[in-house]
Length: 73
Image (cartoon, rainbow, N blue to C red):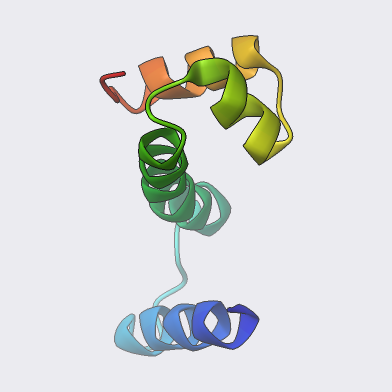
């Protein structure tokens, strides 16, 4: 998985054609975090307690992130 992420970031930087990225950390985190939350929530049958446990975060943090990304549960 790590190689795939590295390749994607390298491609993104190459596509910028010498321009410096802006806010790269937040951009990468949001691109990974949102689909991960959706996928794990679905895997746990929309059970927030199980999802939070699976992700290793507390339920309050999960709820905050679901709201942040407008993910229906």
